[in-house]
Image (cartoon, rainbow, N blue to C red):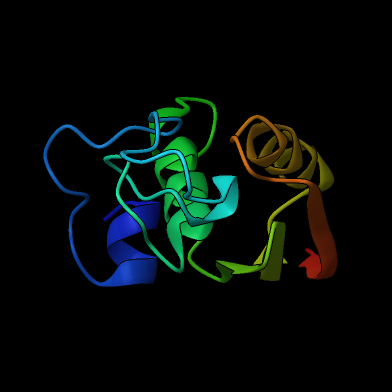
Length: 108
């Protein structure tokens, strides 16, 4: 099971993209879904997909991804600091992510 499947309870849709073009110009970057459609939790879904697409990251089953506006919120526990640093870096690379909040993450 990967990040997206575990967090959102289903497989990512076919042809999902981490940074798709919005289907209409009025969609805020943090609300762009996996295929460019409007999605309230589009940023969190695209970050989870980005984690799945990064071969250096394996699913940390005690960590969750959420969003508050354009802030990516990581919650839970990760195995080590290097993994958390990589996750923060990957999340920053997703369009619409202005801040990555890892204050709710425990390392260990």
